Image (cartoon, rainbow, N blue to C red; front, side, top):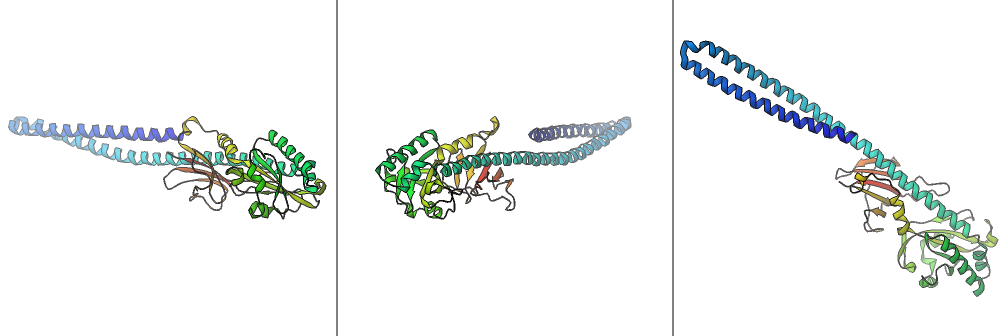
Length: 341
């Protein structure tokens, strides 16, 4: 509807301009005729005196019509320009709010999905095979734990791998030894996600980390979730080691982006993105270089978690900061929907 208002105002303005020009053209011709009539009246002498009076009156009326047309054109043109601006502002307001709502829906879908990842890692850390593998690491317990992790991964296809590590950062068992043999040689002590997870206080807690490429997983991008494995699987048991799960980010990110319901006329003119707290692009449609490219939310009001603005190209950008979900507070990520044309 707002777009129709703008188009209608532009059409009326165009028609007004054409009609005003037509009036000006007619009055010009009328004045010329009046002047010619005066010339002919002068040639006729006294016999043409009456005709000269009529010609003078026609000239005067023509001039008056021209002045009225000019005044009407100027007045209506200003009002139509104001109407066009109001319509454009209304388009921005309506579309900007829609984009902000879509951005919120996007990041909310992400939060709800990643909350489930935090539940998975805490649950699987209590699995008897995982606990036994770290309580009594021997070929049999490691073999069974590897088998058990593989069974879990067969059902939860959103993960690339699941790792069981001791407290020194050595991988004791993982779900896909045939697919990712390099994991067996991983020393996780140098990894930030490992170091930051050593201080997890209980089995009810976990850590979530930004998306990064994992060299041991063939440099695929993963979102890592961790918790400590505890004695007897008890929430307050002595820490035995760590469970790390690697969420298949790129594959699942596409499904997040596709969850946004764009209108048919928006698909070729709209960009949808997920950004991390540093505005690094984690996912994008249309596609771009991920994890290295950034998108500046330069017009974003700093005191709002959701909103819209015009960027330097004049395009509307809607954004929403992660609200978190249940026990998953979010990592400061944004959903972004931007007009590109």
